[in-house]
Length: 181
Image 1 (cartoon, rainbow, N blue to C red):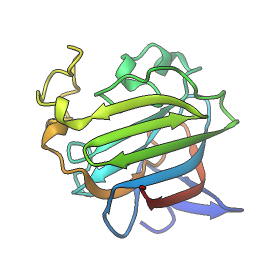
Image 2: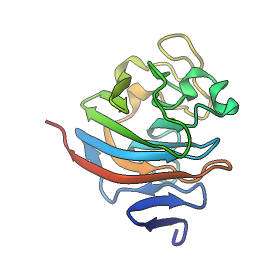
Image 3: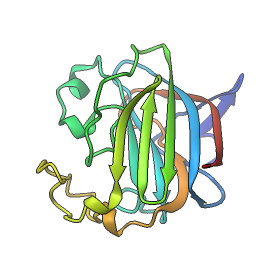
Image 4: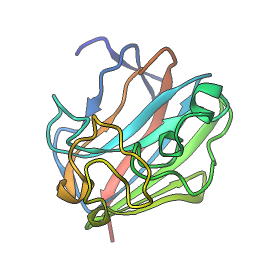
């Protein structure tokens, strides 16, 4: 809604936990953006969303979290920044300290989702391997609110930026989308 998301000097931020969505659906694309956390930030980039009103089970979320906050550092590995929230832990922790800009690149091609943070690959997901609504392929638990297995989600949809979730702000800038080669 109006007034939740603001843009100043090319930097986008939100005052509440309300996602900002693309107007159209996207399929087979490269998304490149920069984000900055505050101490304790928990946010994300939402992809393949087919229902913006009930987006949590109907999308995949590339997690953004402050890895220097105990709350997120001690959370389940699938909740760490650079991973696919609740589904795939990041291969490595590359998110910088709060206040520093990070670059995130997401390649959505067919049923594959790849994520890079600050130049290093953090996630490489074949959606079709996520067939169980309760367990990830590695045996870890999927949060109950992610009730639709990734294998059943379409590999296209709206792209969203998660707003101020919890008590810490997130900032985005230089958000660019182009068709994947």
